Length: 268
Image 1 (cartoon, rainbow, N blue to C red):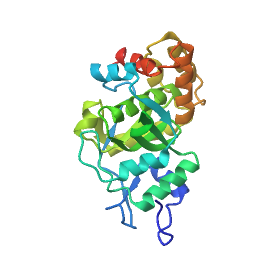
Image 2: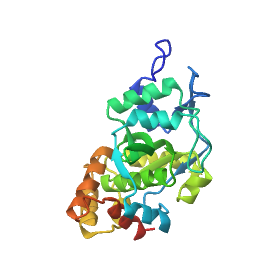
Image 3: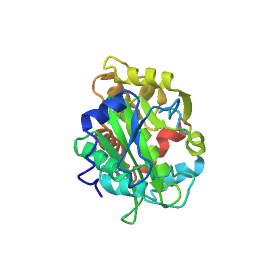
């Protein structure tokens, strides 16, 4: 559902400028036509080489319980993130995603700046996340799950794809106990802004992907080559496709989750 005509979408140039400046919009409720701009005093990020993957989550990835896709159902993911739901440890609540905000991000997705990771079971969307990507940065906005581990699987794929694509910064906005359990860390906004500036600098040389390691020689070589390329940063959809290509080259085309599990069980 889109915002009424009387409440125009946020201009994409303004929205991207806000993200590049460390600011993001929120609303008070789903039907609130107004929005306010947030610059947290404390900021949460998830270091791309610091994701905590439990043994049970690694087994879930290896067993291929879910199909994972990128940008297949962006609007559905936003609908699910915004929908009222009973509290779960991996839900962040979606009441701040107003119709106006959703329409603005759907437009950003159309323009190629906002992306989603979807998790499916037997053709049903059961988990996912979405956010905004630019340069070596991905700003996670919200995630949801209706089945155990589905949003965690989405996060594993997100982190693996960001590392594969040469990203250096995954913004989580606000710290929660759930994010902390997955390896997120909190820092002053000033420190976050320094990391944000560095990640937007085209001359910045990433070390995260190359130092994080890999579960297979083929994947490790691919990550290293992407990192050495410097300017050749991949967008999230491109990096996701590259991960699938890595899985295929390792003989795991039918079960790419095994590659994702290998990436983290050897570096967690």
